[in-house]
Length: 381
Image 1: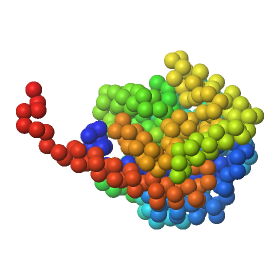
Image 2: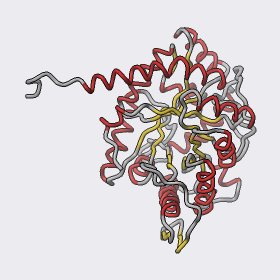
Image 3: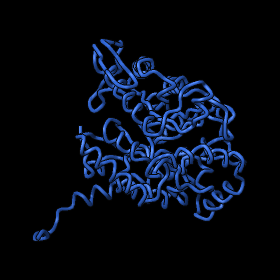
Image 4: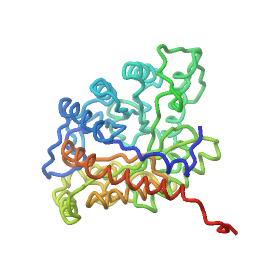
């Protein structure tokens, strides 16, 4: 299955939200957040989101209390709970190779997929938090080795999901004549649960270009995102592989741009400095460990890290019209999906669905009309 850039422009932009299953919300700040990490809040949020234009939700994963996130629900179990509470929402569970065996995860996801009618997905996190591995007595691999392991992990998942007599012989995993039933539900364009993967490094980009269904980008400005899309598409073309693109962004939609900017300033001014600095110390050693210094968060400033996936950089901040036009420009540059965080989830997800999304859909109609307009005779040399 291949996706051309032209075809992508005709497909509606998809939306996902970060599930706040971790305490502290989506910003490391002491600003008031009417957001809760508990199940009841998140159950209601999932229903609200699927009724306001969101197609996906991504559950976070933290295994140890850290950086302002003292409490967290485990991602796979929480994802299944949200799948059972909704009708259409696709839920992506973040998981770590090295802490999961791919065969065990494949079995869990297959069951979740059948139970939910084909709505389960995974986000394979190669790992940036060394203390989570060493604290559990697991080895901490060198950066590129973590991505080599992730590639094998993804290949094993797909092998087990699609073949009755699964075989795989790698450096990290070996599967011999293994069969899991039930298999996940297959449908046109979806032979198995979707596999998402992030990372900024060359190793991460090459991984996406070989095996992943989706590549997640940390928050980026237009040029930064375009550079990633071009790079990953190049690797995908070399491997005759199709990959789609998701972009992280933190939305502050208000009636005026001044209100939105004031909210951003307050978030940063009230940042939990100790937690942000601790997070920065952990993630920037991961980013700087790559040979080309392209790792995640390698160039992030303090203000960027208050939203811990650089969501402010995407600049989805302002009036509904401003945010919608910026979203469309990211679509033109290759985004198939925007992964969004919010300050006050219930209120702001509903506001996004009622006030921002309709403008985006109207602007998409303009794209379609423009593409359908025939070129004047003699316009080509």
